[in-house]
Length: 218
Image (cartoon, one colour):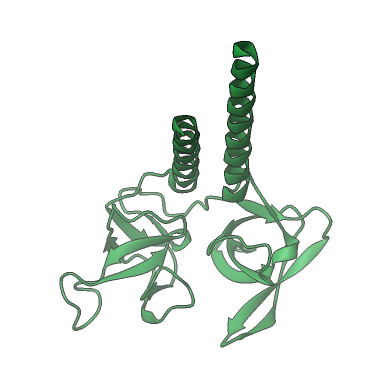
């Protein structure tokens, strides 16, 4: 019975470490205390582009950031003095790709690329979302164009929200078909899969080790 408890404790510890490692990988970043908008963008009610829009901001607006909030896509910002009738504790969310650390004097936002347009496409079309429909716009992206995925990557989604540089070197945000995207690096699911494989290997080693001890005793 004791051996079973030890094995269970080891499994739980490995899964905990694996999930922590995955979270660290996803959110490993320095969060500035203040940011400024680099293009016209929205303040969302939740950290989700589908949530209600509280207000639209112009370029150059400085915002105070909650540095304890960890998210790969959004900053949590104070809307006090930004939104009329808001309370001092009110917060909203803005997209990281549309903002820059306020302490950086560079006039141009540098996108933190995490994907690109697949090699097997000569070019792909961008789409704009209107209500629940997606309409093709007169913008196309060439193959290997580097992009920033804004609202998480889900291969089962038909469209993915991205940012990229247009021909005028301005950052714009549109949707593209998810099948046209190639994601960079190791994603969360890969990390979890690796952690699971390691856990299985440890369990097998323990089981065979216990069997070996029993044989020696007999």
